[in-house]
Image 1 (cartoon, rainbow, N blue to C red):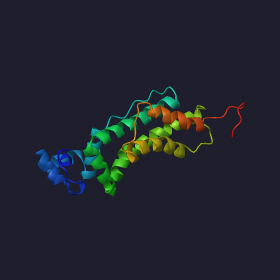
Image 2: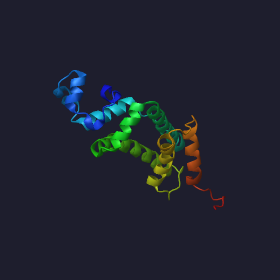
Image 3: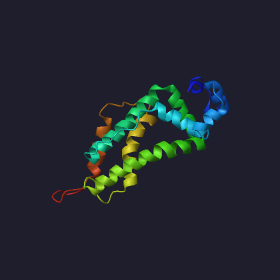
Length: 180
């Protein structure tokens, strides 16, 4: 973190330089991480808010908790120039991005898909919904607000508003209602 705070680009960081800055030998670093990619992913995870516990009361409640977690991550990365810089640099490094995606993004996506599957199974979501697309609709709305509109408002009720607006079009239609 110190090297990143000092403005050293990811491409210029090596295990040797990290070990020297930390005052340890390279072997100490390699005992815990197999390489630079895993080390960066751990640094980023440590700087992010922890993954939330899901209430499990309903698909809606779980979706709100998951999106609120994404909103909080957006607030953290906006407040931290270091994290923002690391995310930007990480995307230009295919190996680091792949490691971050595999250990952070993919498990979060799998959890969201499981919540949506459960909602579909429990009748909270239409059976004909493409769950991958539904996941992208929920997450995409929050990501636009947190990353693509860095000056955009991130109000505390944003997760709930996104979930409710999206679910309005994805819920099963009762037999007494006409669809348009």
